[in-house]
Length: 243
Image (cartoon, rainbow, N blue to C red; front, side, top):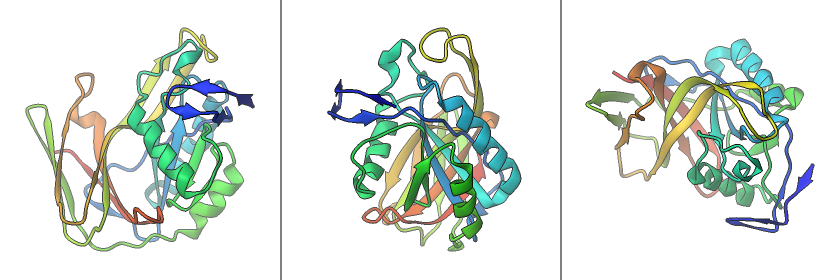
């Protein structure tokens, strides 16, 4: 455990470096979250304990396959340790802070796993994660989801009935050779990295993303979460390939 007394964007927050998760969701057209689980991971390549949870959640994804969607958000508050996580962003950190407030926690930490927007635990707690996945609480609302690439712009269309939606551009996998910081000399493998996301009100049914220069269409997919913004509860989810 490490206590940080000053960090840009945080006031006297305690950042705990535990273990990270990362996962690989099924990439098929408009898979509906019927009786399934969403697990959101907040992680960083600058956290020395994180690689342990990468393995844990990869195993869970392999075990549960279509019953589990994991989305990995790399936060940016560990970048000061000597290694800048190239997948990190302030937007990902803000997403985590949203959950910190909703769940009444005193601080942010990595790796943090949030299950279905309502429960949270350390990313390496395989027993807790398995128990939540086994509940399979999410149901499908029959909505549709599609994505098409024209030039370097990805156009996403969603069907009616989603309510508040979070649309994510997800990179399937990546491997990083870490040259500095706590993980110096390690080769870190990631899956289901959230490269960009946008929050949509119920009145909107489309979104656009710019495909990152380092990626090809086949290396990504689109995920949608229907979520109650006030409570954090995720009601359903779907994924689609990019055409």
